[in-house]
Amino acid sequence: MTLRVLISGAGVAGPALALAFRRAGARADVTVVEVAPRLRTSGFAVDVRGPAQLGVLDRLGVLDELREQQTHGSAMTFVAEDGSEIFRLPPEFTGGELEVRRSDLSATLVRHSAPSTEYVFGDAITGLTETPDGVEVRFRHAPDRTFDLVVGADGMHSGVRRLRFGPEQQFVRHLNYYVAGWDVSGAGSDVLHYGVPGRLAALGPRSAMVVFAAPELPVDFHDAAPQKELITSTFRGLGWRVPELLAGLADAPEIYFDAISRVRVPRWTSERVALLGDAAWGVTLGGMGVGTGIVGAHVLAGEVANGRPLAAYEEHLRRYAGRWQKRADPGRFLAPRTRHGLWLRNALFSQAVVRSALLKSTDNFAADPALPSYA
Image 1 (cartoon, one colour):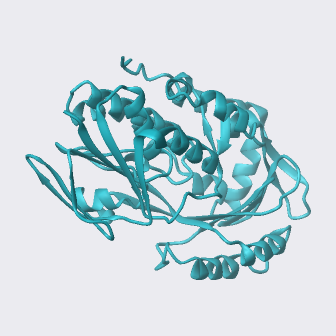
Image 2 (image 1 turned 90 degrees about the vertical axis):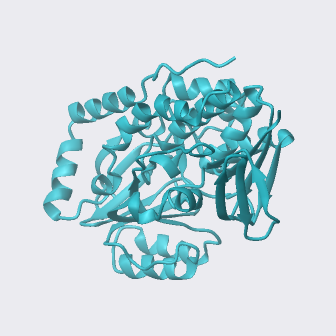
């Protein structure tokens, strides 16, 4: 029997799962639905590290191609208002063993999975009814269809999670920071970071980023205009190169904007519905999330292809995803709220021994989780 699979989300984890089904030899008709009208062409660089993550990319047949696209990592240099260096985290910390732009990773996975996958852009799931014979799915535009398996790989604000497991506020904890990014013409190879208490602005070779402390705000995540207004009002009056970044923001055709949050879901699976990637265990700017989503795609496809229940996928991934996710709090590191907190971070990371310990800790989190090997 051919399995009818619907994946919500065409970011990274969704296309990785579509390709993993094909590589696992599963008899599956796979459809990927994506609310955006097209793939994103902008976004931050993401890193993959550790034998498990690199091994899965190799099994998927995309590792060599991604090595040709890698950005080789950029050092994180924290600077004072006059541009003088405070401390510098080397590329090995920021870029892992393989760093690529998120948009390049997504496009590569989509391209390799497309011959055996139906991609539907500009649509979304609006209803799920799980029955003994399948999952009846309603779409915003397309006719209703029935699938044997539905996977929510649709990010921190997952619609599948909301429809099947409960409202977002049950699972997503706002960490009292926001982040935004957009493409610019930067300079140099390092990513320069300038901060004052509760606010950080960063400029890299191809993108700008801001992080700022704030409680939950009534921001429309689908409307760029009020997002740009909020960023401009928050960062207006700061020195360094902030005026230059704000000028570029005004003309940016595409902007990434989100609350920095942590997702904790007690259960990722039911009999016919599963959550994958950020929908299940995400942390905004968490660093290890993209690679863990790729590993999760490999395990989920392997378990399904071998006829095992979805709960087996969850059992394999819980510990691996949880050991880095519970500690990640990027907003506090990037934009400490107080002058003392900012001084303390700068003083600590100016010491070589602290930077070395941080790099070692990051490598330990990426250690091989002894993944099952699927034929």
